Length: 412
Image 1: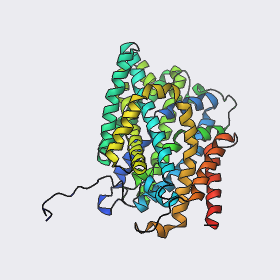
Image 2: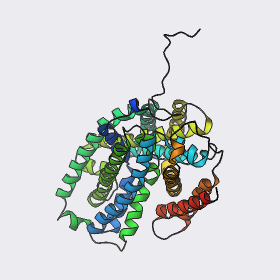
Image 3: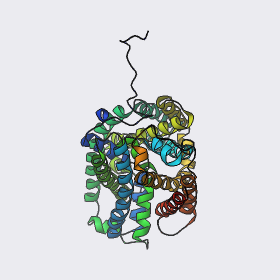
Image 4: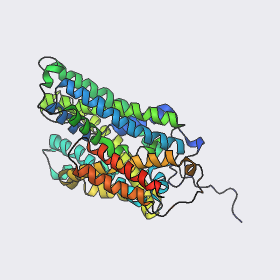
């Protein structure tokens, strides 16, 4: 006879089921998690490119246009995640089929493990250069320490992600903004004059960079908004966070480029004599995105290999940590290719939900093994996004994927 007093193990991350109402969280918590998610250090690289290619007016225009499209995309995914309580991988089972879902799960896992490793190196390399003269031993020590800390927060799930976000978001936002203002004040002339003239790039070009900078990570939005108390909270927290978080990162990168010729607020703060604060800002900036990335990778691998989320987070963290420096120097161009492949996944998840809402109301509804219109849509959308050098790559991919999926539904 089963012991009535035995404690029932509860999966606080609900990797295999919808998040119940009693486990949902308020707007402020969701906003902090999503804002921390968008504090993505690689976006500062994009800020540097924008500053070099556009004048100030073009820079602002690119942020508004690209940010609006990115916010619309992630907002829709945020709504679906919050309304259903399902993760990206559980949504994929309904849109792509039980086995077809392995494709989006593999894509998101590979991309997020890659960016996790790159993020570790983005912290370790500059800090090791400043403190230890670029020592390889110091570099790897920092990679391992950061890898353990960031993997641990992802391992313990949404609760740890919440704690890290509440600490990191105010710290990064306030200190980073203060450093940016100090840098501008030390320069000659106004911010508009320091920005310089456009090098001939267009706002469409800039908007494409803005969207591409975080559209792959943004596809994982349902993994976090499923904890929102309702669809409205999921959408609002996501849209505002993407506008504020991404814009801050682009501004940090742009000012860094103008002030020191680099692409990182870390360099600006070091030049301002704020080294230890710079280490805190850089570390927590990367941490907030890296733990979310690893969390998503763990959910994806759990879906593919039918394992628990926590061991898959550990596997993802070990791979990302072991390959961090190599990924930093060799993998970014490949990750940018993957960035174009994930928007087709997101748009199909959104279309599937709005076209088949009834299938999402019951966990007992029959699922296909493979939904071929969805799979083909992602493959063709990814190919077009990477091969068509016109317009905005991620938008092109979404358009093709949506068309394929909708045509397929007519013959289903």
